[in-house]
Length: 168
Image 1 (tube, one colour):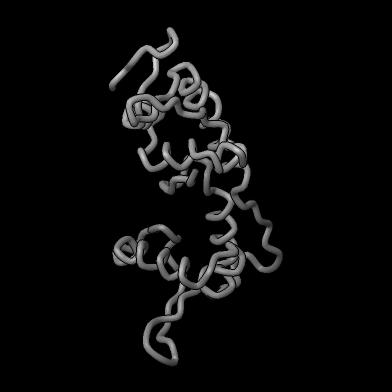
Image 2: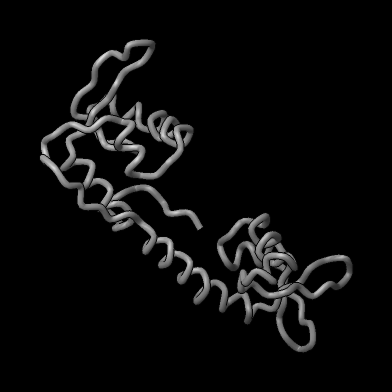
């Protein structure tokens, strides 16, 4: 990490800021842009010197140790918690499951693609393994899950029991 003393304080460049905060250089550039800082990103403004942007390590430490954990915690708070009324053994369709999650058809299709390998082993993937599957009227398959399994899976997300990372 390249460190330079500016105004008596240690500063690092974009690559160093990315390493120090464990974020990509693209994230550092985005979050420290004037627009993002005006919108409350909480990241420090760079000091321009020799055509490079330099960031005070003390402010990056606050970002890493205070701001980023707050972002992770707030993302965890946004995880769905549902109580699905009805017979817990009743099968619900993929369409119903997708609506409960409030995700687009495109996102759902991606989740299914990410789950296929695990499903071949009869294991949960990105989505839980289905309880019933039948051929669709057209190409493909129609899948169903027991209401209880959908509720348990949704309520477990973000508790550390799932492998899915919450996005920043």
